[in-house]
Length: 307
Image (cartoon, rainbow, N blue to C red):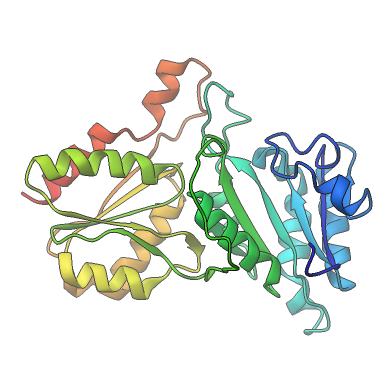
């Protein structure tokens, strides 16, 4: 925002309150109430305003206080944000970032535990990325703001308390690039967002059992980085997908399809996909845990694939 005066932020409580998870803390004092604009509780209205602002030359960052609330702005995100560059014959660019907390938290209930990546992945013209560390959150956010395309940046509600030393110098990450988290030889584990940490917890157990898993944080949910994914599959010949998204119509289903289309001949075993249960997320913590993939399930899946 210091470098580019066209960057602005819209959303509920993003101003002097600093956002529901304090992501925009201090920005209103630095840049004023017009560039860090508190909005009414009207997601369809302020998301549409963000699209219009992008059409007129601004670079809005639209925050959903909870990603589930952005279902109220689905028309603006799909018919406007994703398609206006095409339907205007290229007359307008939509350099808009839509971001906010989502995923299964701790007893937030069904409506506040949505994973909207499955809803948004079929929208033409929309790019999707998911951050998982402070380092890639900053790098992906910078890249998303500078992109000429509309980008949805998924943040996980349980990852805001992570701490990491990040470089003082400027850096920007590629929006279309996956991250190699752990090199390995026996099986490729593809994951993103919070599940990265469940996978790495499982990886410690797998190493003790004699397995050598390769872990990739795909980060780019649309499009997939098939170059990085493909090179890993050509080495390990086995794939496990771990996601918090729903099993039916989720990111894992699309990723499995892409792997079959492009790397079928390199597979020595069926692709396995561990996803959340196709049920509303329960409030009770024990039932909530039962709907989400746990490290022990990842260990069992790898053992099955590598038999």
